[in-house]
Length: 163
Image (cartoon, rainbow, N blue to C red; front, side):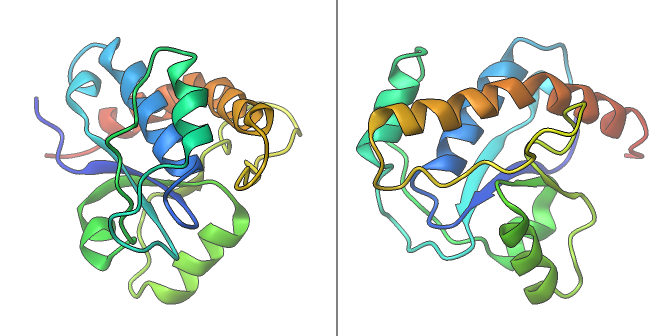
């Protein structure tokens, strides 16, 4: 069974958090059964320019866990990306709010990347831009912590999605 739509991870400029999040989630989905394995994860930014490479510290933070985002190039979040999305995962409440204010109609499945984590912990992933590598690694680790809850949500979403 093919599932239509992409998963979109969203941050501000699409050079730090969302490319890391997309690569980490794509990696996790590759270990799942179909149809999760075939889902495509892309990233975009609410204030992104087109064609900017991922920040060097984002590249290094993922290289440390065996993932390569050195070929990533930024793209703005467009209406078409939202329309084609199965689900959109944002890094912060402000990203979510910008999409809710600017998108008409609003995307159906719009959430925070850490929204499905149990407990009352911080649901946002702060912007590491300009910080040292350890700040990027901390953001990466916050994303990794959220991945199992996202995979579980995607399983329920696909199970109830009509073709």
